[in-house]
Length: 452
Image (cartoon, rainbow, N blue to C red; front, side):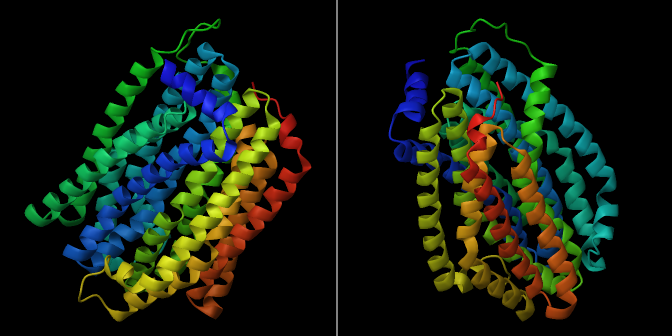
């Protein structure tokens, strides 16, 4: 219990920049491992099976990422209540919020798993997935959706660990599950020769073990907190309603990249499977590069929620400025690495005999997008303040505007400007999102929002 109190006090009384950095660092490392975890399928099938297998997993990736981000966004939204109750010292309500979020999202995941299992072929066909990879993509998704409840369980529980200030626990669990996933991927593909089906099965097994471990650890940790004045419940409808009002915009914010990618997938698919393979490689690498930005924004959200619960608005502003400095440094470093080593990085995803079109597409995309990662960092940090305060209306509108710009620009301009129109749509959407959210942050109205 003493360790828990020290972590809480660090968030509420220590140097804001230092507290944010050391809280965000395990989240960044954990999210990186989660991306490696998700990326292992693409790297292994791309290197050991071939271009079509990479394209099949890539075609599936845009859809699976939407569900991953729903889970992450839902967890982040639900964790705002948990963080604010923790900051206010209301431990009974804090536990109730955790149980309510867990069982609600577990039920949602079962429904989504059924829908995804039976409708994935229709969705892939609607997205104009090339015929030569459609069957493999459908197979991958059907297996993947069988493990969707495990994915939701793990991500909701990870958000709750972060809300409690225990961001190291998800990191250790992700390191374990990532290593397990890679070992199983290699065994399924290289030894059992199961191809696309093998990497999907490996992912489900690793996610399941990680989710069950997370659940056990959380139950153990909650025993260390006093009950408080409020009785602990496993479900509270009023708390679910309040949490949902925050979770929906959070889901939108976390899902913008993946939903945008899904909605422009048909544009990319129309250029053929080789271009799709290269673009898929580029997107997977991008997903790693934006991890520090997204994780910093999520850390700002938790920092904001705990300090809002403790009535420390000015400290929130100092934490926000610390987050901005962090994402600026990350953006410069990532840009330099990609500009210098883009060729080697792209080749890690492609087999030696992969066509030139795939390599050229992946390389061009990375060299372009690397200049703009600071925009998503600014957006994520600003959105983090608004989400942590529970001020979600403008924040959701800004993210929807981001999504609309990306989809419209890509669909309208791609027939004229080619695949490059898909790339330009991304930083334009990020910039508009940041500007709208920042203007609202400057009004200060978020600091007067009442959630608990």
